[in-house]
Amino acid sequence: MGNKKRMIKMFSLLTIMFILSFSLNVNAEGGIDNNDYSNEVVPGHEKTERWSYTSSINSYLTIDTNGSSTSTCTVTGYQSLATKIIIYTYLQKYQNGSWVSVDSGSSTFYSWHAAIEYPFSVYASWGRDYRTYNSIYVYSGDSYEHINAYSNVHHYHSSSDSSNCIS
Image 1: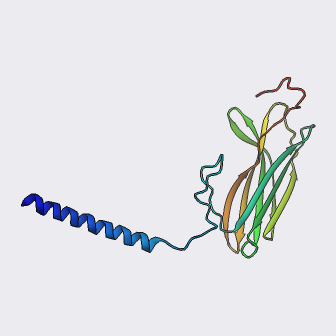
Image 2: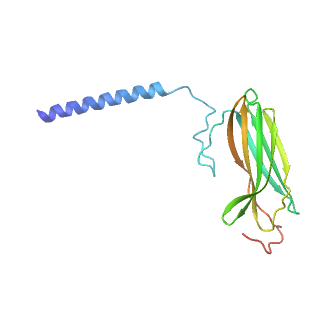
Image 3: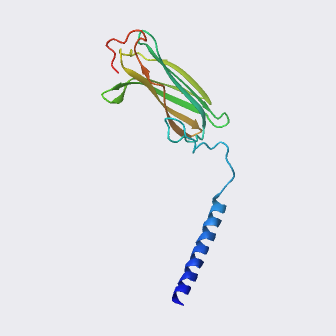
């Protein structure tokens, strides 16, 4: 009889746990948010976070044949929420196994949209890798969110001549 009572108690306990877990899940579940991309997998990024005030960010680096580099960054906030955008842009060079900032600039926009085209004063060195790192603050009144955005990586050299080119 002892085993039967123990099994009944175990079954009762499991039943209560099942009912409680089901009721907690039902209560915790809200409406479906079609703008929630928090589980989206993007190649190169393990998880994409949903932004509160920002709709999109685009970041580019161009380097011309003379080694002159320009950062282009556009930020679009939600028109009804974003009131100010600050963009700090950094030209980064890959050396000794890490990215090092070699020049920088910034701009502030009192709007829901911002676009900068910032020419750096430092010229690219032959055979080196470069990118831009953008530290972006999007405000809604006194509240803000901070987003980091990186451009594509450029390996600076001529496509027809790779002499003295460091990989």
